[in-house]
Image (cartoon, rainbow, N blue to C red):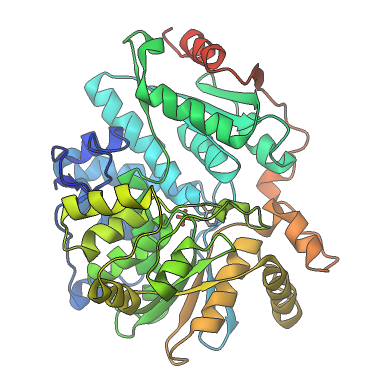
Length: 466
Ligand SMILES: *Cc1c(COP(=O)(O)O)cnc(C)c1O
């Protein structure tokens, strides 16, 4: 399998190189040159498979001969055995034909574990083979940092440095990062805000001379193709559990960077009958505004009760724009260069095509809280604020009540107790048993000034073979 850039000018790469590369050299994102396609008969034959075996069937064509089948199977078995539920992604029923797929049974209680648990293992495997080492550098305001750290904790060929804004992440989120033990794990609290952290990471990728040429930086944010690939699997899993592929399904996806829902779009293109995909956003609704009015325009960032969806632009949307433009990289390049300067639109027939593929809805904080309360009162089931947005959008956008509607449950409610409290409920979501001692665990992190040379010097001194 070969991968090409959405901006048409970078060289095509194989799976291993795509894994180790962040952005393509032309600023684009990598996508598969062609997608595998599965017949209904083949998909039907996967009914009843354990999650990791299904994952093998869906992902093997993308990995191809980069990893021998037996090794890849073993890696997937390990990856999905760390989830605290036998079904890995259990389905919970809310109403007739209405479901939540719980994607938060992994080590950090958010769906990002599905991809990052695998990504850490994939990286280590490829680096072992190549006798190489990488330094992962990332900035986090919450979920991604802890999932990346958990994913890399056992990697021998990876050091990971995660920057978070000092005293500006929640205690649960900080502890999920800083209590993970491992010589290759380095948490840096920067005396600054999230943007300061992100700027330092970006500048460091641009000029890696501080590493002295002895190692290189790698990215684990959602532009990494392997993360998308891992997320395709659970769409098949949900469908097969509810009578697919002999009936079609609808999905509602709490959306930020458009990674998770893009995986659903790919599942459909690969042959899974999906009749509706709902983009559910919070007040940071650039995608909903585009879908409603064909205007792609950046607004100021708003802080909401669903912080993991607080974005100004959705980086993975570029991958959809590439398809909408008939895979014309230069058209995408021009469009996105213009979008950086001001609002843009696409040709009407392309936009109408996008509207056939997706429905969308934006949900504000008040309605998020109302939904948490409503579902609790109806079912005694507690939603986290991100999943609540998905459930609300699902109910607002639903086209056919005969089609099962599945909302992706992206986080455990215990991660976001403030939203639960604000919804007026007096229940407190308890941490799951495997994390109940989080507040007693020993923390390790280093506080540094908001100064890039100090941070870079710290990294240069602390990676494994420094
Ligand atoms: C990251 C995240 C999202 C958004 O996912 P995207 O792939 O960026 O669209 C939604 N909910 C939670 C809890 C997340 O952590």
